[in-house]
Structure formats: C-alpha cells, structure tokens
Length: 376
Image 1 (cartoon, rainbow, N blue to C red):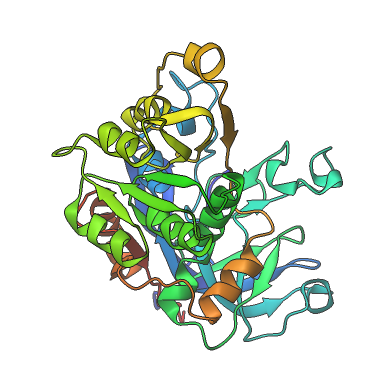
Image 2 (cartoon, helix red, strand yellow):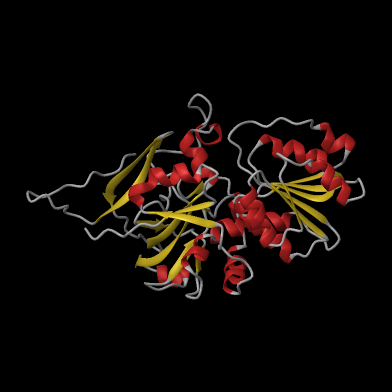
C-alpha cells in the first residue's frame, strides 16, 4: 500500500484537498510529505490535529527497535508506509454518516481517541477488555485501519474510543491525556494502599505523571528514582517524599532503610532500561507487587527465580489506558494533575526530525508536534 501522489494542474496548484504529514517508510526513514487529506466513511470522524506528542515508543520505532520491526525483517508490528503518532488530540472537522450520533460529537468539538483501534469482534473486545484486542491495531503503526496524528488531519474509524475534552483544559494539558491515562492504569495496577512504600523507577513523562497519580493515592512513602536531577526536582514538586539518583546514591540501601530492611511494597518500572528491572527485583520486598510498564528497545535478562522461589512476587503488566481517559480528563479539569514542567518543547511538522531527536534525549521531557492545518 502506498500513498496517493497528488496531481497538479498546469498552474502547479494541487487539484484535491491535501495536507502535510510525517510518513514512516522504515527505520530511520521518515519523510515530510504532501498527501491526500482523509475523508470520513460511515460513522467515522476526521479531526484537525491540535497537537501530537512524541512518545518513547515513537523514538524506539524510529530507531528500528526489534519489538517494532522484528528480527531480520520477520515479525514486524509496524506496516509502512504509515503516518506515526498516537498521543494526539484535535477538533472535529468532518463527520461521516451517523458519526454524530455514534460518537456523541459535533463539528468543532475538541476530542481525543484512545490509541488502540479495537476490532470489537475478538474474545477480548467482546468481554470488555478492548485494550488487549487480539488484532491490536494502534494509531500510528499500521495503515490497516487508520494513520496516526503526525499530520494536519486524521481519520477516526467507527470502532475508535472517542472522548470530548472540556474547553477549560489547556492545550498542553490536553496533549498529555493519552500518556496520563496510561499512568493512571499503571498506578491502579499497583493496588496502592495507605501504608505502602511505593517506588517509581524512571522520571520521564510517564514516571512524572505516575508520581502525581500515586501521590493522590496517599501512600506512606512515595520514592522516585532517576538519573536526571532536574526530573527528580520535578518529581519532588509532584509529591515524591524521597528522590534518589542511583548514579550518586545507593538506591537499594535507601529503600531498605525506609522499610526496616524489607524493601518496597510496590515497584513500578518505567525506565525502559534493563537495570530498572533487575534493580526492582532486588529492591522489592517478599510478596510485593511489581508493575511493568516500559517498552524496551532490547531484551532484558533477570534471575527469574527471584519471582517465585525467593520472593513469591505478584508481577503485573500495564498496557495502554483502558477506561482511564475520562478519569484523566477529570483530574486535569480539576487541576489535580498538570502538564506544567512535563511539556517542555513544541515544534511544527516541518521540524519533525529535530523534534524526534530532542524527544530521544535527556534535554527534554515531553515534546509536541503542533501542525498548522493545510489550506490547499
């Protein structure tokens, strides 16, 4: 499948509605192109993109990580060419037949769609566990259903989970609804209790949002671990009781000292680095709850016997943000969670390459692309 090349008339003007988009053709092969603007089908929407965040998984996909591209070209999850981007929101631009009633929206409404496009037919979708859809199409990785949000416009298929965003929520706050929903789901998987010592490993965008959510759960102690002092300072602002830089401090010793030598009750791994896993297995107490969120760029090895024979851990995965978008929107609307300090940079689509490079560095936290809708 390829993108339709737009035809021009003798004056050089494009004959049909067009837009700009970043198009992924393969690892390290992304291009800014002029492509046909999508049109809505039955019970579908087209939105104009207000902002699209760049996720760590976007950076790893761009760099060619095996989990996206398979090994030696086999088992690739990404199906290029495809417009990337799953942390988007925008305004309803066009509605297909029946879409207004289907989604409960009107033209001009500010909306967000969850990152997964469920099939609504598999055993997971039909039992309410749509985020684990067996087909598992996600915006920005396959064109089978729809492209992603690194474009002026995008189409939302009829099975999309669409939510309206109140006017009082700022652009930067609206731009973090997707990752915030993932953070809420992850923290909920930790089943945090009032007397728990909770460790969040990693103070990137997700870790900082998890810190805010975990703080709302009022655990006995909230600990955040990261290598970047500025991010640790932000975690402290967001409610962390203790922050640790493992480059200069013994994280395991500090956590053990906080817990009478036992270890933390809940460990949430969001570093995306193998050391985040092995550190957590050592740091967590027996019968503790280990929540794994990260997307890894390479395989991670650990002494698996720790989980069973030595500690009988409860290891839980956390995937996407099911049923959490309304919660995220409500928390932002009430000012209980914020993007302040997390959203650090914004670029137009034309500077997508600079944006991805910055997002893949420690010189930013959350980077946004903000398209200017085409007028062609």
